[in-house]
Image (tube, rainbow, N blue to C red):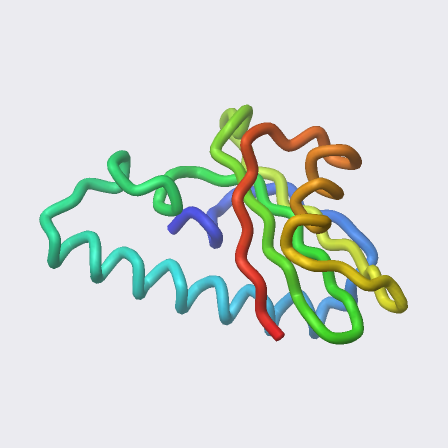
Length: 113
């Protein structure tokens, strides 16, 4: 499962409890997408979100943004959590943040209120 992989490097300033809650949601997304891909006869390499991902999770007061890329993942996916409380962001600004601060190339994103 690409959002949830082992081993991976994890860092950031978001509490462990919040990280666990986010990982539970990402695990459910992984399972749902894998089920749909299987039903459609698709291999993991044909579905971008089922490939190994570097992930950036931005937690604001109102929204959680999950920004990911398949570029430059290498053998050890990187997951970075950032507490952005007090900041106003939308999905576009969250993607730009990941591009600037974490040098993510060709990222895509998910937004959860």
